[in-house]
Length: 313
Image (cartoon, rainbow, N blue to C red; front, side, top):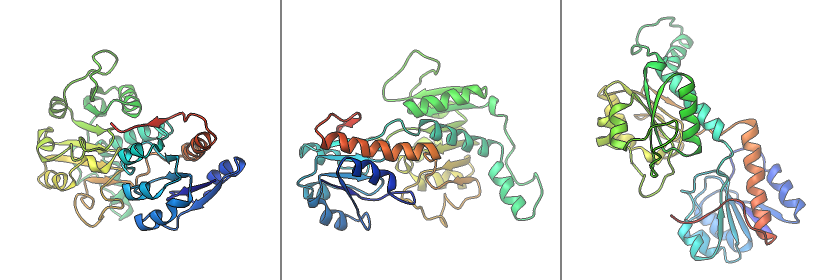
């Protein structure tokens, strides 16, 4: 049996190949993640593993023998779930492999914004040793954090922020009236919090959830942090409120598209920190992700139940 790997974000595919080879399966690595290429290769395989390449309806319809599409990650916005469901193809993800990494990266970005770390670093590397030219530095424990999306990652971000002494509020699709993090509606959270951190999946309901209207609801001098999906934010609107001085800064580990046009706002603005979709990565998390995604493929092709099946909303 053949397994198509659409794309990958690490130096080699030996982890995936080893898991599949031990199960008597062959790994086929696509030369690129373009729809035309994947559509051509899809009829030959019993499974598809994908990192970021779009697994479209056309690719799925061409995969006449495919029994599983395994997402090497958490989000599923690059897979046409409904098309897979209609064809009876199992879709899986690895929903908990990088919870701590993303939460830690989020706190690192918050600290870098509030304490001016990125600004001071850029200045000193250019030979300027000065505390001037940055917005007033803030005391973290005096700021209110709003966590949008209280899943595993959002919950861990809230816990870390509380350990720093921050007051934390949350909002999510499912109201959680009990627990250590108080809940409020999104519009209220945006109005009351000095820092807003996004931890939502990207779908039709959440695309550009953070638009011009909602950005203007945030207090003047506040910050936006996004380590979830770039499409959650209208980046043109974000550039506008930053250039107007309404927001003090933003930190974006995810963008739309990726890589983004770094020479254009908001990405080129000095008050914006950009990291290259790196929040998930650590020596532990990436190895775990690759192994567990491949193991899901083996389970399904050997007639077993997957551990983390997903279905259309």
